[in-house]
Length: 89
Image (cartoon, rainbow, N blue to C red):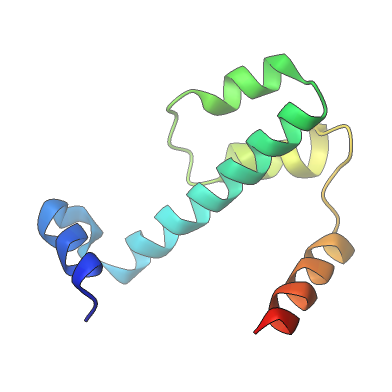
């Protein structure tokens, strides 16, 4: 087990479950992507709503990315990211 993972588990007992850890990672990735899209699109109101410390497990961010973003997230775009990421390795 990596040292950093052990430190996280000791510091936060709620992260001991792999499901909780997966939800945290999912939420952080979606929040980052949603904040980046809102900033790039100059959607100040959405940026403020998304930056608030609301824990919705990525649901609010996903709704923004798919429905309300000026350039909605598409499945083809996600596939191209996965392809680019897999080619780098």
